[in-house]
Image (cartoon, rainbow, N blue to C red; front, side):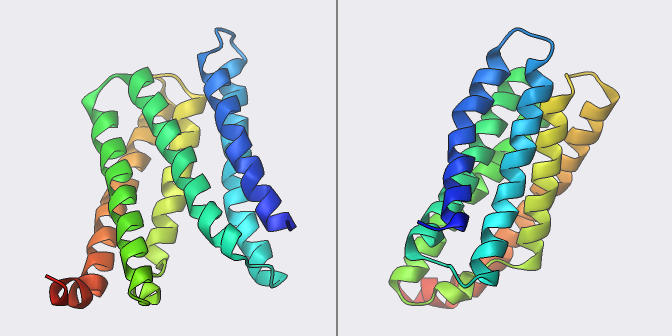
Length: 182
């Protein structure tokens, strides 16, 4: 167990706290939920940075980090779908969740073929992740109808567009391998 893996486990531990805070009926619960989401988002960046910088990458961390990220994002988006209860938040949220499922399956399949590097994270994927984290943070912190909530939804739409773009890039990179196995 090393610090990057501990940070990933902390991110997973924040998920039930985020859900509990989301449903508490106090005025301070949503801002605190946003703080926990922000801290979890920071650990998402920090654990990878530290693992590379300190040469502490492990198979356990390589497995757990994307799982923690996808769990945190999917659960936060599901909570926000319920909170906002509108198509203009649901649509980009489902695009993001759906893409994560497709790309996770694609990466697993490519890894089985020894071609995981063909679907490595790109700068578009990193930008998409940053924008979706910012959007989710804003949407947790501000209630539907608030001016900043509109900014959050707009940011989520941009993240969803980048999500589709990056998914197309990943599928293009994997297509030669996919088409050979049909």
